[in-house]
Image 1 (cartoon, rainbow, N blue to C red):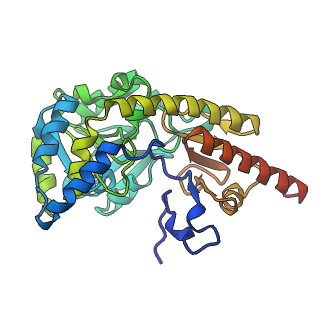
Image 2: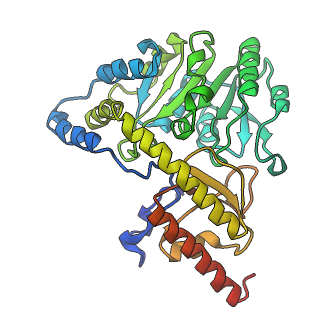
Image 3: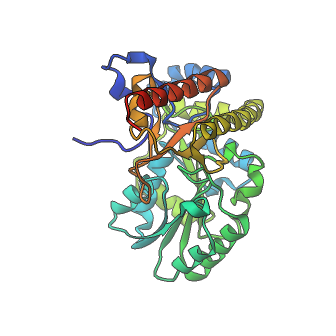
Length: 362
């Protein structure tokens, strides 16, 4: 039976004693929830569901292009960022790719569907899981695609700006596509300085992946997109999938979400404060954290060894990171939520550690 390797699987807990009382820290979604305007847009769109959705997402693309200050011809919208990944794999068909490790597993999963071979650039704990200039040595004319998640998932670390530009330049010289995942960039302080969106016009080999999912707390609607100035690639992406891949409610939600500037500002401030709080609390419990810049915290805690399972019994799901390439069983990732919920999580961690100590688990 197929087993999902991602966070957010609250459905496996439905038949447990926890039922609906589970608190999901395994999925990195905006803690403010769906904006009220987005909820209303979804409700209003239901009456239009007797029709097929616009296959070209024209209204959403028009508004998104203005919001991003790019040409609308550069945009391809699909049923979530993960869906874009699989369409890109089918369209580009890279023979060889360079992936950072650890990083989001669906890059590899998507590329394996076209028999792509991988070279890993392994991020090191002693270097705080930050990529160095030796990454450039992995890039050559035999590499068809380099994939960089910025900030990285699960570490939350940003790649150095100058290094990222060097990677982009070298990929341009070697004829290599750079797929840059900026799905969590909206949660980064000063995100405009770190994004490479402004480089799209100059570099036709650059593809940037984004999603509404995490930013506007709408993972259940599925709405993601990519940007590239390679307009022939955009055309091929449309040709390599069915036309009606974005539902009417999802398009309406995206259009409404782009007006939510105050919501984004409030989200950033909440996450900045609560990320500091959670980091300090985790470190006070003996965990090693790595300075996340995103809406989640990556940490290492060696005892108790079954932390995730013990927390699940207390009603909290956290992301075990042992199935990431280049990580082991003592690494975890948690989302950043509100203070009330964060306090409850920290209280639960203290309790399971205390209980484990009493029974001699460590």
